[in-house]
Image 1 (cartoon, rainbow, N blue to C red):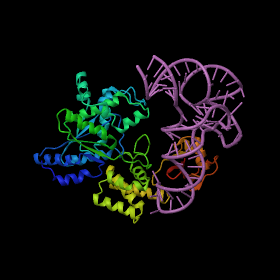
Image 2: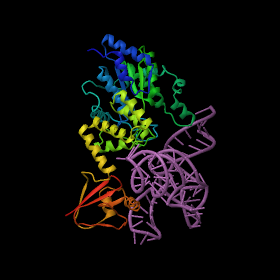
Image 3: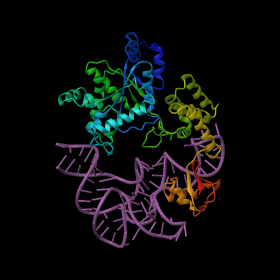
Image 4: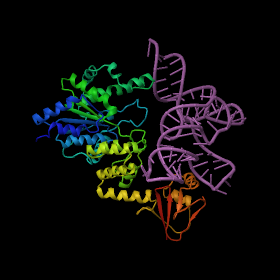
Length: 403
RNA sequence: GGUGGGGUACCGAAGUGGCCAACCGGGGCAGACUGUAAAUCUGCUGACUUACGUCUUCGGAGGUUCGAAUCCUUCCCCCACCA
């Protein structure tokens, strides 16, 4: 099949990585792969929970895609084993035991999402229950004999929690071992993960060695910081850009990131070439370019990736109209009324506010307007005499038609 | 099994009988400003009510009290240490 030269591959693969351990081994493996014309087996494990992928997840998935494009074999491993067992000690009840069917359903959902990035034909999807479930007690004991408590406690996370009196379940302790065994079962050459996964991935190396295999190369990717600028992107924190978000939302959310995040988002979430990345960082540092322009470029890139260029242009136009020029968007939800309606009731009924209390507060704060005029009276009635535009905050609109 | 600590709003975290719808920080929302939904500043952030105010909240259930997130009883859950 023929792989590109090793140097070329490394150039692509090293971009945006947090750590590659040990660095030299990746080159060595690539070299051997090149010489023997054998693809590397590259794996990444994912939770079997219902996925709702955001661009934070795509950082490593995009890396998988790069391996794939270079001709290597990508294994998208669904960690359904622990899901089937369930974690009784979990502090949050979310970790309930899943059935085979749950997992199947989630796997399907995964496919729909990851195939927005990965090639459906080339991607191998596997489940670790395939080999973990049939293991007998003896096999498990053998596996557990290959690692020590002291080594597990080396992990910052564990030792901190242990010291601070936070719980560590035995399952969590065993988790890295099973995850490591996955690499044995798949004969993985490379395993990817978020930088918080470094420890687990490294255990995989040890386990492979214990089972007589050449250890995998561990590649960690930075955790993308969410739109708030402080925490890592996560669904529960609401600071994410979902890969199925509509174009305007994707664009807008990206525009709301703090300026400092611009370089890392470019590096991790777009295909902008490496040379341009350094240019962008330099421009930001020298303040020679308006950060807003860089950010709108970023937002366009991202929208284009998950929708298309036209959507990106439209989203940008929308943003300019609504946010910058504080004008009206082309499209907005409509409500039809036949008689005057109390403003607060109207806002609540159409979901522009979550409670009447919120509506009152927003009116007090001067956030509500009709046809460009601020509504200051909580008792204001929206007349049923033609068309009116009600606006709440910067980007909540409702067109009122009477009839 | 024993001893001690703990469960507070979206998250973190104060509060240990009335001044508590509950300090503060983060997040979120809004206003001002602006080259951006950046930054900065200010305000808001349980529900209902035009308003006065009313109602529901501090793990669950009871109780004491004029009055409880705060005291008592009991139950559930979490953690550490000792065994």
